[in-house]
Image: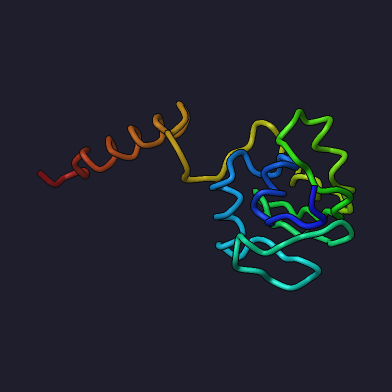
Length: 130
């Protein structure tokens, strides 16, 4: 096996991308950096020791290439191709389970009752006026 490989092929072998086409679109879309330099060509060669930074689904993956793969094997084999240097993911914002933003979605039963009462007030004639 050679000592270098195309970045899109390596991303596919390492199971970062599901297909090689998606791996190439990650690179051409500007979501991949190689040794802290943005790359735009999927044919960029990578070798062991290179650091690949990927912006993927709201996370930042920082992977140091340990080996070049010769096939897309199981996940256990793919994990031997890199060392994960990624920072830990940020904890999700804590929201109470019963809360929802006001004005969003379907009205609650209480909201519907308030709407009906408000409409009834609009329809009711004032005292003395017809």
